[in-house]
Image (cartoon, rainbow, N blue to C red; front, side):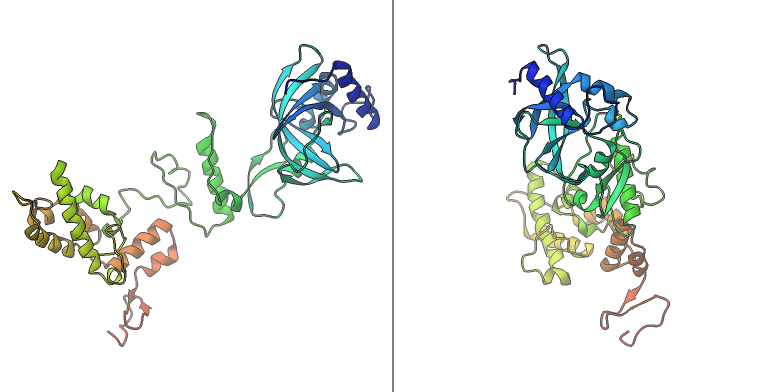
Length: 392
């Protein structure tokens, strides 16, 4: 992309295009929005090399349209006519050409294309992607605020407004919610540019658009608690009671096992068998053909401790016994077991799961149902204060 047309060819193309559009060299600034400011010199995939005329750009600096006043600058947009379409491109870099002092060489990246109104020449129906690329020698035009309004139009799809498009003051910057949440995306920026603020703003707008939706945010640094104090439920180790049976096997090992080295591996094998036996005793566990130790199946701590006692007697190492958690008495008196038992005291596994799921999803309806009692025979739900059904 280093080949350039001669200086006289560049000036001839600019003058010819200006005469064709009815705007001569002395035309007032901004009198016609579609005055060329340069030409395409080379094409390479999704980018292109352009030559911009400083004499054509200078009168636009005083234009009342802020978009036209920023024409030709890094970060601004330009447009190229290809057949009956307009291609919109973003200016990525600029450099002064030594051979032609009044010419600025730039690199542009294509953003998308839109149709051209035959009556007015205006852009409409913008879409991402380019179907027809321009040829070297095509004129480059400055975009206007009207063009950007078409480029960033949110149409009638579900969207959230997070600001305005620079340098305009009335073109909203909108995000399509479905398209954004349907894929992985990241907010990238240097330190202090407002990434956390932008993330909080986007989430607030989504909550306003869909108040019945549920968003789970993992905040290890605790920087979003103040931002969602009024419309969010904050859970931490002080108020979140998670059922112990939701832990996977690795988390069970962290709670139960105290040994190290080879002995810990032996204890882990015994714990896996005990945990699998405890989960298999539940009604849900019996219905699963291939039950694993990581399956989130409710079980009773008494079943686990009873199974560990029997396995300790049945499975021993060649030389010495390998008691899981030291002994059964030590296991039942351990602090982690007391903590897990206390968080679930006085309620069944079904009730514990309802309370946890309603708290984590902040669903008032589900939270209200967690205080009800259910008859297993007729599957009817009634408040604790009401009379019991005929099934007892």
